[in-house]
Image (tube, rainbow, N blue to C red):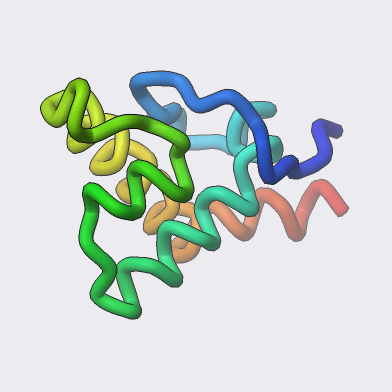
Length: 89
């Protein structure tokens, strides 16, 4: 099993598979940070810069797209994806 990493490279699109992926396992910390930032009302551009290590000034469209994709996956993890973690140990 992939271990979560704070510095895991971020793809332009998070997975959309109905099951947990190695990418998900690697990005558990990222997903938690995204959910925390959303709950705190953090600015998405700042979150993209700090959490996803993207430069929203250089490519705002990409930063917003990557942020939205990963936040959606983080929500999926918190709503149902976590069950896969529980089953896998």
